[in-house]
Image (cartoon, rainbow, N blue to C red; front, side, top):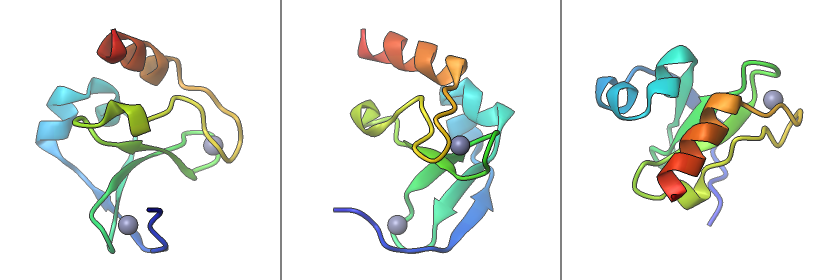
Length: 82
Ligand SMILES: [Zn+2]
Ligand SMILES: [Zn+2]
């Protein structure tokens, strides 16, 4: 199910920053509706990927809005997926 909320507030999550180092190097926004966290694309400022450490399958390294691919996220995902 896709969330239809359009309100995303900027959040700082110390636990997430420790667990997922690249989230500390950018911005993370949290959905006001469902609480889902998203990493902000450094190129277009859109939402690049969901951030969900318990379900890395839903995460992606390429921005769906501008096609920017983040090398840090890509390497991290490859490591997490084994
Ligand atoms: Zn939501
Ligand atoms: Zn983008």
